[in-house]
Image 1 (cartoon, rainbow, N blue to C red):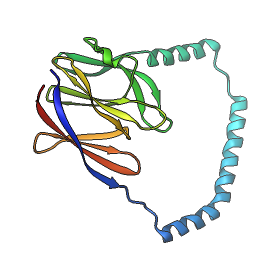
Image 2 (cartoon, rainbow, N blue to C red; image 1 turned 90 degrees about the horizontal axis):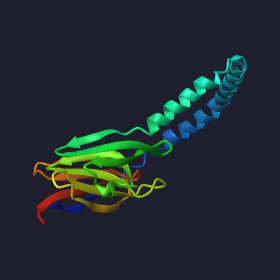
Image 3 (cartoon, rainbow, N blue to C red; image 1 turned 180 degrees about the horizontal axis):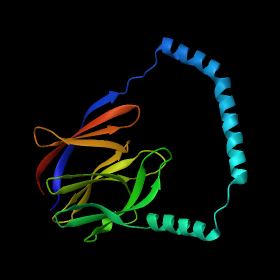
Length: 199
């Protein structure tokens, strides 16, 4: 039987805007003064790179094929994400958000059908025979679900839907409960996760 948790939003903090008029004005002046210098350095760098590339010896086709095979093998390889009690979770690289985190495909031993054909973040947390995972609903914008898997019975459930963040941190509180902190970029969301009785 899957343990039940009571999850409640306890705090929503706006992230401070760091706009100081003096600093902003100073940065504008510096950017105007430094722009021509940066442009000249960029042009010289591009010219140097073009000259080097003209004289560079191209790699053989065989070595390029080996490199492509090695990259494909890496992206197709399953590795262990975590092993808790009788449950082993494997991960495989699925993709990466531009300038952001990676997302993964997961599978388990023993097999948990819920994990099939879904994507997950590389975040997980183990607590009281419960493995918590971050399921992604989208790769376009942050929209995640908090998943709980009982590591003894393998029962799986979505504990919370539609969290607008992939940047999570979780800590145990003094009351032996959990506090999940999610950074949306514009605000910090804090959730209290308390254990309920067994179902």
